Image (cartoon, rainbow, N blue to C red; front, top):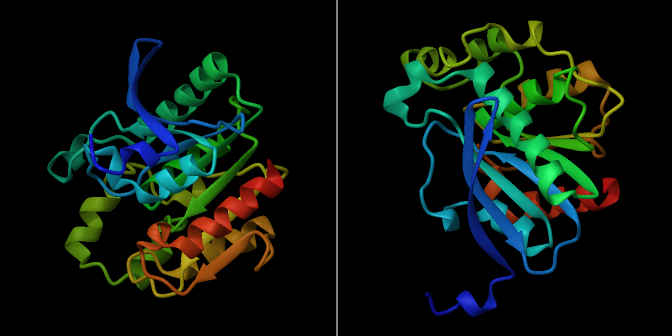
Length: 241
């Protein structure tokens, strides 16, 4: 046990659900003083960090009293990107939410996604058959593939490999969000991977207000790790929760 573990306000519990024959695994960050509200968290990137301590933003939410279910996608790893499945990841997010509600019975349940996980969150949030979310937080994720190709500074070969993950293109033709649901979009004004314009396009589509439901903070693609971002999100969550 590390020197400062006694001061943690949460504990990490590995979880494993079997839903309709499909396995959903990850970590539950369980706060010692739970506010009876939860977050299903979809991580960014194509690799999963095996150490729970690596997810600094998740820890911030757990320390604030939120139970956070961090999902490990069915297939992880940059080398395995060809076998990763956007649609399956969407279903896993929904299955995790249904199980979380059944087992923990939170008063409120929010969805949160970062980068790749943000794109998955958009899809899971729009799934008409599963109205399980009380709100969603979407951080630095692609929304319009055709526009992204023109504005990102990712090398084209790398971008094409990443976009192959979605297997459906563009996202904007398949995503139909529930406008009545609470949504917070947070993008980085200095982000060269997913430019702020991606968030602007989605915010405009949803009639979200800048400074209320849509923010472009002065950070790069890792803005989820910044304290300013976390404080902003926690404030929004508390107002909606």
